[in-house]
Length: 320
Image 1 (cartoon, one colour):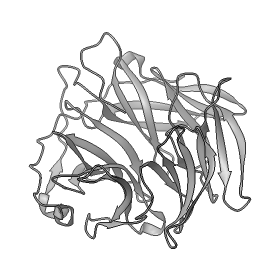
Image 2 (cartoon, helix red, strand yellow):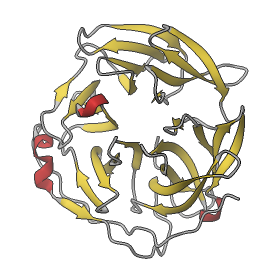
Image 3 (tube, helix red, strand yellow):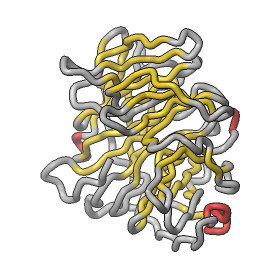
Image 4 (cartoon, one colour):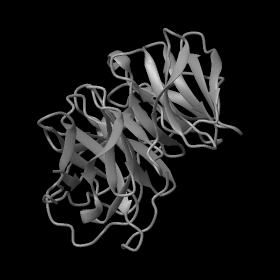
């Protein structure tokens, strides 16, 4: 049976002042490390928080999610989690009008700022293949949205695709090819080479969630349609897309476990696509939360979930 117990959650942390200057992301290490103390939450924070929960195998097949705790627990926007191959969790945190990339180390329970750009915002931090760095969508000072990258320590910021904009989301096939959600009417799925800078459109009218499929040079995405949405997989080697599973009603984001289980969140529930059907594997209703984005750790034993207070609870929507 799926169960959630509220562990001693993580208290809000003191937010570091931003490092000034356009090149401030090169000084991410100097902004210091923030230990995340454990304590008791006395109220529901406004906006989105990132919750960490354990994943367990179920005897007879399937998985279940248990023991959730609030990792960020502060007013404002904490969102877009992604795990690195070593288990480090990357996410964005908003301060004022901008967002920066942060990381959390599960072993030390320490948060670190990765970027600190005064006049720009970073979104969708994504570990690059072969530990080449962290790719992200940067909203530049003139509002241009392009694909950028920094080294794992936040140094050496660089544009990966100079001529492709506006980019909203992305996922990697391998070290050269990347799938892009390019904004437009409709939004399109484009495959770009970071070596040549060229891109081609392979789908249109897609959702915002792009995910690398474990063990394949393939990316999954949501194909929108009047009769319902479908999770599709574009295989780079086959140069073709195939249907995988119908989207859960009300779900906008999806993720994969390392073992190849597709997961989605809708309302207060987390679902897994197991044996050709959606099964409930986690339930946040007892915590008064609704879920959206998800990310699964590289060992398949931990899941990060973006959640916010359910309607009627204290707090406000925290954005996408």
